Image (cartoon, rainbow, N blue to C red; front, top):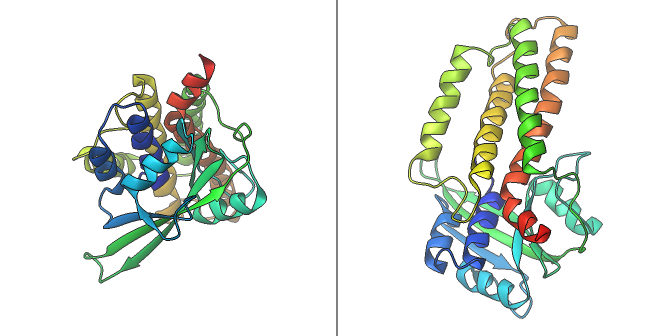
Length: 260
């Protein structure tokens, strides 16, 4: 979770565009980010893949009033509402965007080419029918913020006790470096999002970074099988909480609109 999901960028800036808070060109530049190009395949009325500008305009014309994010994982269909075919593709990609009001969803497929350091990335978003139903397991911003604070405290305590690499000063430095990189040249979320959503997303990314670092930096002092198992048990619920909070942040403007 050290990088922003493409579904998050698409939903955030797509929502800003739908709310007339950014221009189509600005939205597309923010969504594409460091990738080379994004296209949308399977859009109703189009026989071939089209660019993001046309696709976002067409989705609005088809009735899309907002975009929601799904970040599913095995056994956790977070943000999804069906049908099974769409859920399966979203689970394989580990992310998706659902169009509120249009019964359509978008799943990214990423193509990479070129040597390390000069990788050319193209993204094709597959547009598919979705079921119009409440998304699975998405908390409110308030719930997400409380869960994150508790998860970070509990996980840090367990990882420190096990002397796991990734729970001390080295991890803090890595997380701060990640945040500095993430903040260069991009806004957190997009215009129109509440400050609380920005705060929740930043904390979710920080917690996700801790989980990734602790998972990738070897076993540290957790040398026994029971200690390694304890670390895994500590990290799984934290990673789940961080994903739920990210989805809550990205979906907050759509959720607020639905409560009015």
